[in-house]
Length: 306
Image (cartoon, rainbow, N blue to C red; front, side):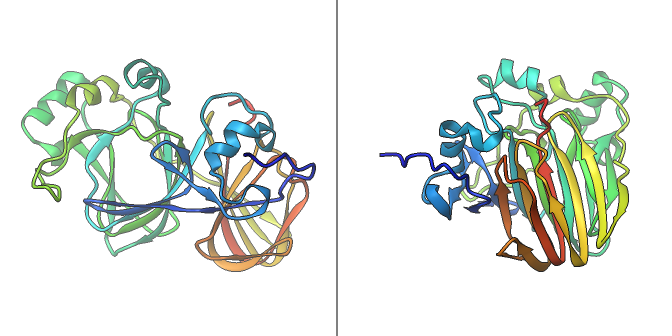
């Protein structure tokens, strides 16, 4: 039997990550409410329930947002070798071709990167015919754009943008709550069963966009005890970074909810200790919570218009 709703809403929700292994490395779904990974609540009245259950049964925790699916998915990705060359669909295409699923816009904050690391972001084809020609002839070096990567970099990956995380990179990913990936190329490698992973060439060519891929330029402002950097504001998510130096910042939660990932340092959220690598969710109505310490953290949240 489900627990009755407490009159006082939990100030924060701690979650148990869902660990996954892949042919290229591993990932942790830190804040997730998807049928392929649903994080367990660690604290409070709903301990032992999943985030998906909370979304379905207590929408007041999320400002009564509309929609069948929790809107965000936060991951940590560790790429030991290159991910496949891939692309994601937008909402319209996914809803038509993937049983009503959401599309997938995503963004990356680089946590660590080996020297001379890089990622794939965008392509050189002017149209679909050129793209098909590059792919059919295996001219991947000519087709794809490669971008150098350093810790602290941020990249927005719109639906329709060809991309790949290359080996030697660890990052945080904020994305729409979707698990749809179309592979164009997977280096002809074999999985643990000796089989090649399936490709999705037709769907990939359907959704690839032919526009210049621009690297997002962040906006940084000074705070009393550090800085706030706004990385991106899309219809699906906003992503910000706070660097607090021996001080504090007030989070008034002017969003349906907040997802916090601790990047470095240590501190407190009210009386809750915060340490590097920790992620948590702040529900709606968590007004005037203070984070203090010597700490850096990433903040992700959906806009009210979503």
